[in-house]
Image (cartoon, rainbow, N blue to C red; front, side, top):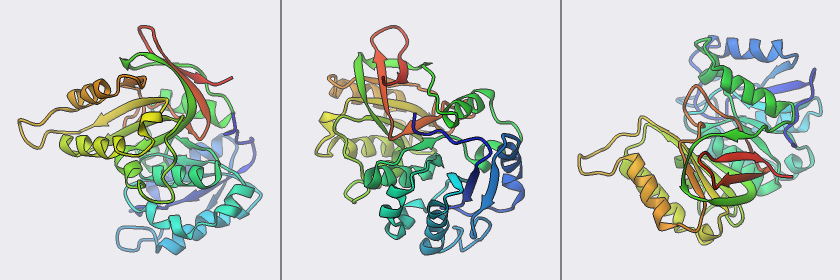
Length: 300
């Protein structure tokens, strides 16, 4: 695995999207990383508040680039998601990132950063914890901690979870994350090629008709049919806008039925849920969806 973060190294902390309301929101998360033996370096704009975000796009990008330029920093972790990560993408220096690879840790809106960096540089990231979301209430789930610990120690253990929609075997580089954020990259230089990839998707607080519309946008991408597989995670608090709308289960089932050649699973434990399996973006994995319960494992 390429996501190994050496013990006793330094981790940079960024707030690339929505701002924090208080330093207290990430205090427990910082303590957790310190107890693992990591040194913590805060970005200059971690606690800033510029309307709903932590700084201008240029300011937020400068925190990210300062950490990529710093050889002592071995990983970068986001405090929270929300909205705004896509704004910083034009202000990143992808040549510098390519020459100084280190994972960005986070999920939700951080999907934009992780997939853009993979597209431009092939540098992998970790769809994992965030300091506010997971630690603000001091109640992080043991499964999330175990999964994250495995990845930062360079190990992706086999995961048996989910329900099969379309059976089959697939191998490919893992991309994706939050559905709304991922499809917002479509048509830009930051949207990853889909051909040969395993795509994972999750979302939260969306009306179901929006999910249906975003999946339609996704399937209209020119290389969608060349996907190796699709993994649907948790779609949390996604309610109907109208009684006649399809619910999430029906939408995912219909989507899979339209693309029966592509192996697909649903109910994989990743997304805006406490018991989360952290995943390595930009790393080749295998999906075995030919038994009763799907298996996700590292590629040889």
